[in-house]
Length: 466
Image 1 (cartoon, rainbow, N blue to C red):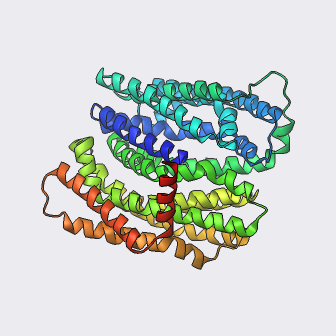
Image 2: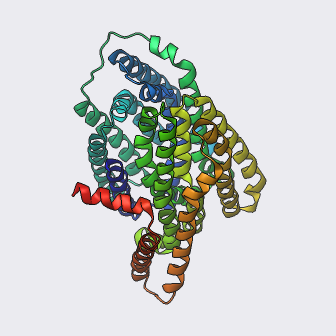
Image 3: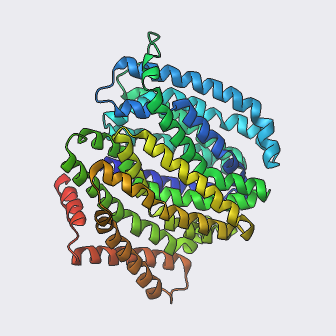
């Protein structure tokens, strides 16, 4: 429940803040920040090096283990920031954007600041402090969002987005230290780092691959098209898509690994738990993502304005693969909970390698064709995970289809019906509201008529909490 509150509220606030800020920015402004996203993300991966995941995977991690990871992260964060600071001229040259010189040096401060909170975040996730995580995230988002809005209204352009990230990282650190009882000390060794190095390095490689996967189109567009507007439109489409699927995937990833670790010795129960997670993810993800694709045009025009109309078709395409992203999250957490970070690593490496092949084959056809090919491949790649899920917990392909396909088909039918029922509406705001309400009502009615168990369990849980 707290995972749902956390991710749901965060995405709504992100949406509202983003609407206000983007109305005072151009696609070129967001494109500049988007070009740097991959560098910050990779640096963030390197500073944690997967050791936070190793901590969460421990049955009972000790204070000394947390301490070792804390100081290692700070050491790595400082070294990486120094490297990126010196690399700023090369980054500006690569993208043919001189403003990136000073912007990158400031923006990269956010991941160095984040290095102080990786161990405390692992502590909170391990102990399932989901209520406290939610409070911290909300305070950080509201504070940093307020700063971004004030700066955007003052004409600070892309600097408002940079300051938002730096302020957000700072508030998160302060909040985690407020709630976590553990405190770092100078009495530490790196023995735990050496002991978990193999496991953690596989996690690191996987994180690196996922980061490249999530940001490589932005980098490619920035280099090939040399147009910040093209990058900005794609970056914005990907941002809205990610906000939507992370609403579902985030609430699952917040609890999936600790829960799966706790039932690891009970194979029958482990399979039941994982299948329920699959059903819950499908129950929410397919209607949310297909619904966003349905209202993408009205949503963009009503919120951030006609200047962003070119990102609409990209958003609609990305929503199709975004619907399957929470399922990938569950498979990845399953592999990690089994101690098989190697499986997680190699499957992600294979995915990124083949994605690059797809991009090289289609980029000359234009941005839209390339995004279509990228989306289709990502959906198909889910099949690569299935044999390992069967080996780990006995999940059959038929089980997967039974748990996911009905929700996909119902959501598709609902969005198709909603589209035709609302064709006569001309006003954009009315059309947006009508499609949201009608689609939600039809989906809920279908779930009730079909006596879908996951809906009944959700309603029982909500009523019980009241």
